[in-house]
Every structure is written in C-alpha cells, then in structure tokens.
Length: 318
Ligand code: SAM
Image (cartoon, rainbow, N blue to C red; front, side, top):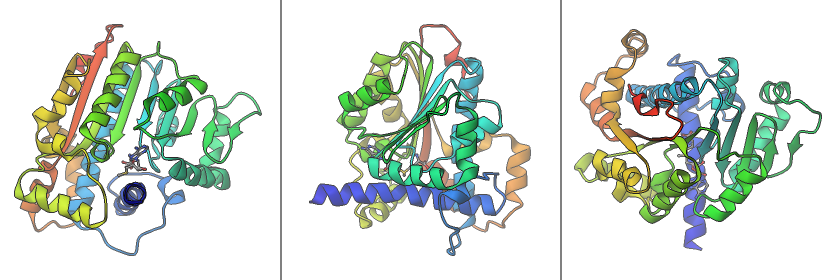
C-alpha cells in the first residue's frame, strides 16, 4: 500500500543520516569509532557544508544531552525516539556519562538490523556485556535488553504499545528522563507528534525533550528541501510544525511542558566552542559561506523541560 511505501522510505532515512555521519567522521569533524560497524564507507563525497551541518547537529544535540545527564548526576533515563543506527550509547559509556538506562525505539525492521550488527561485532557487544551484571542478556530478533541499554521495536504512532514495551523493560516514570528525537517528528502528523510529547509530559514529572529537525520550511529554500525529500517518497506529515521556531516551541508549551526554547542551527553553530569550530573550518575549504548559512538556518533544536524535582533543568542552554 501507499502507506507501507511511505514507511519504508522513512526507514531508509536512518541510513542517510548514518552515512553522512560516517563520512564527516572520516574527514575528522568529530570522532565516532563505532559508526563504521553500522554503515559502509560511502564512495560518494559529501559537500563541506553538509559536513559542517552534521557537525553542528551532533555537537548541538550532545551538548544538551550531556548537560541533562550532568544535572542529574547520571541518575536518569534517556529515551531516544527513532534512534536509527545512532551510536550515542557507546559514546556515553566511553565518557563515563551512562544514565541508569539508555533506551532506543525504532521500527522493528530497523531494530532487527541494529541488533544483528551488535551481535556480530564484538566492539559493539563488548561494552553492553561489560555493563551487564548477569549472564542472561536478552537478545532476540526485535529487542535487546541489558542492565544499561535497551532497544525496542515499536511504532511511535501507537502510544499504548510504546508505553507497554518501555514498562516491560523497566522504564521508570520516577526517574528524570530525557527524550531525544533527531529528524523524526517531521514524519509524524502534527496530531501524532503532539500526542507523543503530551504522553511524555504526562508520564514523567521531571523530564527534558530535545528535538532536532527542519525549520522555516515555508520559504523558497525550505520548499526545495521538501521537494527533495518528497521525490524519495518520504511522507513529511509533520512539516507544518517546521514553519517557525515559535511553532516548534508551541508544540511543547501546549502539551504540558513548563519551558521551551528553540534556536536555528546557524545560531547554535555560533554558540558552540569556537576553538573546535575553528579547527573543523580548516578541514575543508568552503567556498559558499551563504549556502552554509541557508542550510543551517533551516534546521533547529528545540528543547523543553518540566522539573518537579527542581534539578534546574530550565537553566540548560547554549
Ligand atoms: N535519529 C537518528 C539519527 O539522527 O541518526 C535517525 C534519523 S532517521 C532520519 C529517522 C528515524 O526515525 C528512522 O530510523 C525511522 O525508522 C524512525 N521513525 C520514523 N517514524 C517512526 C515511527 N512512526 N515509529 C518508529 N520509528 C520511526
């Protein structure tokens, strides 16, 4: 059916993200020793502005994630929604920043692939075994459960199913919880993403939600970005929420979150540690500064908090 085709197209987007991340790391933009086990090295070159865009995306999201984990002194959970082939679990382990439990959710088909890679590649499986206390690690075709890392196959549009699976794997509503969605909500309708973020706000008393996705999609450049994705049959059901930073914040403020902030990625890029930005800007010559600006102005990070435990989550900012 058409909707199966659209879901399939959405699933292949996780390869695109990881292929671009692998390419940028091979050029030295940042280090990720694990991504090589999930995607092949691409023969196709990525333009310097794409690599800088991924640099801003990865560092922007990591900055907020690490700030949350530090505020909670690691006594927290992270739930990565539509995680794809993301390697954050391994980075956090290497940096001694592992939360009590790190959850990932994606379509069962993506999860099966990820678990297959983990099972067959010791550099991926060793850190999971090391952080697990017993011999009884659960790994089957569509879920992995260990003491610190759980991967669940679920559809983000089915909230009762999602909640049931998270609870089955010891998700605790009492722990401060960080939700992460990176280029995911745009594939849900505005109603579906609102229900998801409302569910998160209603289920957890102390939480932060970090959402990375497109913004300013109503202008000329934005329209071209949409056409490019649509040409690949991707159904951008949620694109209307990507019209402005205000609309991004409103999605959270209207569903039970106490605070919400949003910045476009050009602003985030200018707020990242400039010594490292200087280093990456010397990696590849970039002719078209304006293209970089336009590209970064069309992505955003929005973060929302609620803070019953008064951990100071509303202070987290760039
Ligand atoms: N967050 C990862 C990253 O940034 O590297 C992957 C991003 S990829 C563009 C979008 C991911 O969202 C895909 O892995 C896709 O399978 C997942 N996704 C989209 N809609 C979903 C849904 N309804 N339920 C579960 N996963 C979904």
